[in-house]
Length: 253
Image 1: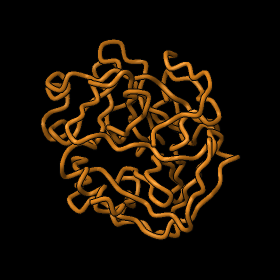
Image 2: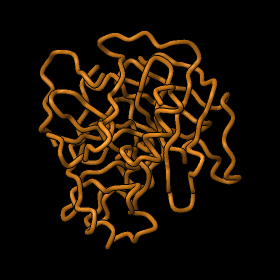
Image 3: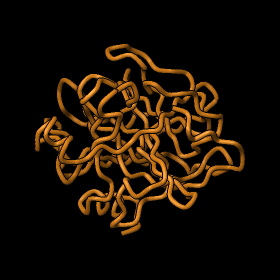
């Protein structure tokens, strides 16, 4: 898991403020459509995709959408070239709270097994005590818009390297309801300019350690996009309640 195919991946280029990813650079990325909305996710194994819970709730009724309304595209950085899978099951974290984005995690089960290749493969789950700040580099990627409030999506995957923001600093900014032991913040705190945005919800914040990428965060919420002192907020995958939910759902528990 978490391995990129051999090739020159320029990790240091500085999806707001991002650059286009190469065609198979992040083979675990999934483009998810939910009715007229888009989100992203990360492939965990041949049948499960990790994403954000809020992606799968109807904005008006707050009810879970039907599985028939959800489709997953995988195997290419280009949406038009990706293979489409239907979804047969939606598992939302049982303690998810839509209002304060607590436990904003969900897992989709796709119909049929995905066939892994250079361009399609799973991301690793981090070790229990691992922290994103210990990694060599953390990146977020998605097909979302690059302008706050803009509709639609980008045809090709964008990526941006993001620093992890000091937890106390971020909690002071947003308050403990949003920033707590189940979440963390990432982005260029003082200058802004690099962030996840609309349509990137559910995307993995992935950190590379010893050559492998693991999913440490899930794009959850934030205010505006890429503004100074308003970094993005991510679900913390290593929190015991989140990691247990993931492992139980995919059958690793």
